[in-house]
Image 1 (spheres, rainbow, N blue to C red):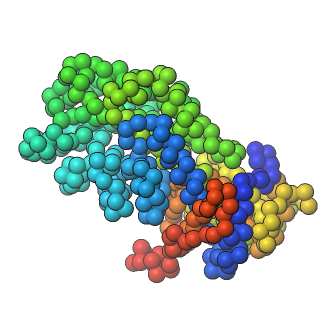
Image 2 (cartoon, rainbow, N blue to C red; image 1 turned 120 degrees about the vertical axis):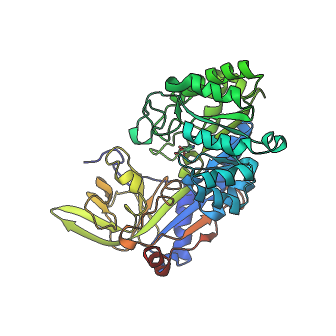
Image 3 (cartoon, rainbow, N blue to C red; image 1 turned 45 degrees about the vertical axis):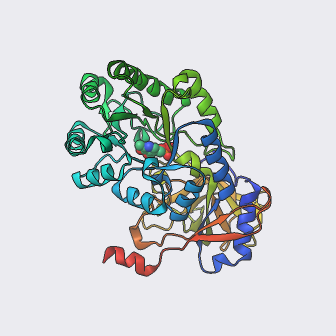
Length: 435
Ligand SMILES: Cc1ncc(COP(=O)(O)O)c(C=O)c1O
């Protein structure tokens, strides 16, 4: 039995308010599955990271490419880290300025590189073949344009994996970037040859890293930066430390915080904070995960082989990344009855599965967990759902992506309205994908 979260966890008041507002506004009358974001929480996190790190703070668009939330990020002073041409285009459309767009894709065509270089976004080159493409494009530009570019190499520091091997991008054999131990001299030769190479980038992984593991990698790359800057009259001006601040999926608390991480980095690598460099960051999960919840109505409550099973609309359609990480990665849930009252299990509980809606057996949002009695028409809230889940939405079984709502308080405490910020997907849109 899964005893990690052995009950329906209690949660912050804004989530209970959101639940009740959704019921009051009859949102579930039309939609059995919704997402809700707390904009106050996101704004506070963005402010904290902007206050603590100097330079350019970006949000990883892959973690949450919802247009109105990208616009919210712009209002909060963040830039955009984009990992594909599609993400670059949506960032441009949302209104991020090119100097605050970081183009990190591991696969960029010549046309995409030409577009990005002309636009003037910050570019991190993934491999030597891409480097040669970039050299060919940039060397044709005039000196004035060259002097505005911030282009560098994504350096793979070749360090150990974090808790999740699948999310560790800085291991010796990683598909990302250029291995520092493998190719230090060749990396240096590009910087000494091309004075428009002003940036350097690393990102060792996402979720499951201790702060010291990430900073070990930064320290390793900074030794390269010092060597290059010694050879080139301080050519590297922009140091991008990536994202990867882990999120606490176990409780309601934001931990570690941006303050914790910036303090830790400052202690180990003070030159990142003393004005010697423009420091770039690319956090995703730590901005968004804890600001968003998913709420599903319970469509059916049934029993099989003695096991209670509640069938919900959220499963592998939304949580494909975690469902394939069972039992390593678990999500906390809270049960509400059909009138929106939080259920603590004192009136009855049993070991049950929350079955996702997809047609394969492994699609279980929660497996063998002690939860309060759940009846048809009740609600299940899934916590820490604001990052990566909507962006990984699966077309499998043609299940429609849910609408998204937002709450924000008037006084920092009370949430008395809920607004729709994205419509749910329509059957026509879904069929168009396959047509
Ligand atoms: C290059 C790069 N930067 C930033 C991020 C964001 O990581 P996180 O959401 O863990 O902060 C990722 C995530 O995969 C990434 O690949």
